[in-house]
Image 1: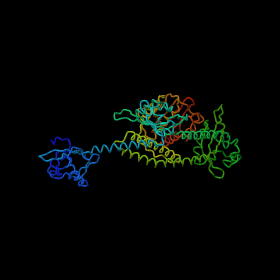
Image 2: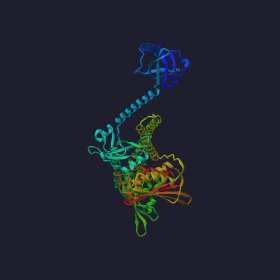
Image 3: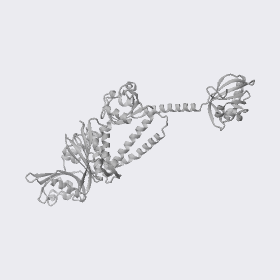
Image 4: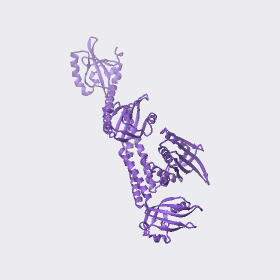
Length: 604
């Protein structure tokens, strides 16, 4: 009968001696029958409890009855190896060979206690996470995945948008906030379903009608069957930041326009048959910039003769372009009369004789940009310091997040895991931005990038990027035209990919009406060099002709998009430097209102 009992069972005489036990009891306590029979039951208790238990046992023997033992108490038993285990004990009476005995039914509670502890810990973790979501600065919204109705709305969301939690709960977020998406709601939902996460900028309207720009991170939560259960949305107000960026871009554009409408001094020179210049006139302001009087410039000197020795090659190139009939602009250093160096922006406009097609005169305007150059150097230094100093805290944050993901409890709620994954992804993006800024700072300081050259298939890179870009737009058709199935070169793959990705992004961004974007890849042989030629052609806004010479200048943006499209104009400047460091070139042909074509040539 004892062996049939499901629990460990011990028969104990009124004296406390163990009379009999079943196999389950032997297994539970790791004792054999011969080791326990005849011993007092206190052997199965921790030493600290034995004396108290002996007294309890005597009182129970005087009034035998069926009851659970230690109701409301934590009971412990002791195994042969000395380890303690939590137990539940039920007592009943039996007469064995005329002697009253107590039957103790003992159950090991270890597993149940562990589950209870785990549940308590999980409940505490959930309370902690809920409290964390309430104290974060960003607006946190949890919404139902099919209807987008609000299920959770933290205090930061109340402060940002003006609606209380009770007012927002059950409302459709996109309707409540009048959300404007960068593409479309369908594409955002498709990205969430496909990737599990989406991020981008949204425009919202608050309860009092104020318009906001928010950086939004969204994550789709699924159950163990893979079914969507909730969407976590974290929104950060970047309205002030975007206003500041817009103000910076606007100020930059105004400065450039004013700079090109004014000049420090102007001049005209007649072009002699041998191509040399004979000064005709020059304004008095030349003395302020160079220290030479107009008479001294006219007596055997030209502006080009004042160019710093290190800039003579670029000055000769500018002169050749002008003599070929092409207006040209260049930034050069001039050596003043007292030996100082000043930076100037030199504009040259040729006058062509119609009958002969020969350039007969050059009109020039010179702008002193020394102060601007000094400010740019300070800006470059600041950019370098900021991007470099960002790396240490970003590395620390990244390490902490990786450690948190590695040590994440197996029973952690999916929401907790998704928060860590979202934060880790955002940190990696910041790290990439920091690296790009640091690269740009290095290039502006005259340092070369540490290119990691490896064999790269340009056609494969383009096809991969086109697939990714096409998924982000439903208003454009992006396709590749290639005369070769593969085109390998020894290039820095990641940096080259970022350059092409930037061109594709621009082609889509600056074609707001949609249209076709065509990427052409071909191979050209010139003398002993094989060139990979890639062009990106769009049907977008185009670029004003007068602004094409400045397009690859840092922080420059065309006037027909400044303030309308997000961006600071860093990408093309960085692209130019990366391509040139590979020994290649990047150029642009554009017609305003028709579209633009960017062309990259790389030696294979």
